[in-house]
Image (tube, rainbow, N blue to C red; front, top):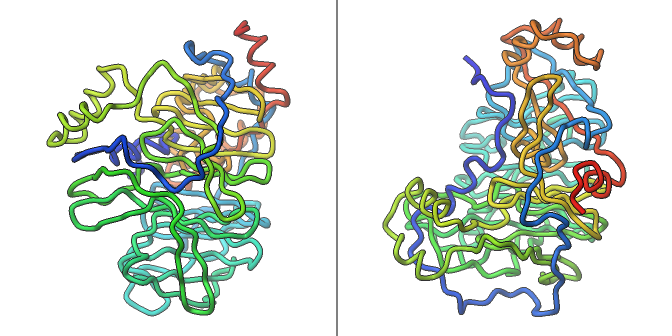
Length: 407
């Protein structure tokens, strides 16, 4: 039976990464170029605002994913869209749909074969090669498939470069690998590495040094969405940080920072909590009024979206930004605690509604959206989820500022 939720918080599990710290050296430096940086201009940084969905979104695009015996999805964990394809990952596999939501094929499958995976850590899109890369850490390999699911090639992951959590291709076509935090079983020295693939060989080059902390007996990445491309620049986040880093010309630079009243945990605090479990540590951080930093990032051509402390979202237009706490869709009676990171499954503002939740809407129709009404009327509880994508208003920061009297 499907879980009765209409979205997954992208960072509901991401902060598991702060579990069980054994130390945090404030003297440790990373390999980011030590250049001057700017503070993010946040209009209401001390007073996050609650907004109505219709005040920030012009429209919502819906895609009904085909339900069939060949593909009945479980809980969606990630969605990517490119060249008329949706790539949807759930708890069981990775599937390709066309732009209309018609099922095309499963991309590889679980198994011990050369073209299969024991566990799929993540996937990324290489738009230049029109290929999808499957990161398979237990099998120490990255497999490449065409968009339609045809096997292309395999690259082996050397022991010292394994454990990759996610990969993003920068605007200058460099591959950037993001790694989980160290734990009791694996020593990870760098948060980010540049990846070069030549033939079936893979090499990495360190970019950002990992902070001296650990997740003890769990393998987990701090952020499920640590990087995004905005205005031809690849921006990256770092664990327990309010800094925004930029990757250009083969190096990472400290570009921006968020000067917030909520401070990050100190060295002393983390040492005192080194033996506590995640839930106790999270509670202590929250009760102490501290922040766990930036926990996720997304971008479209107009705005960058940053999750702050897993409770607020910064929306930035390159000049100024606004801090949103909660978004309410009064038409459908839905709350979006993290509006920019909608659905928790994509770095492209794509979310999803589970079918059983939409079925509950039958009693509340009509809404102003005839498309939404038609979807709800025809959907069945056992059907696949419906994808949605927010189209945000132009000049959004000024619009919110005036609408909610933030200046």
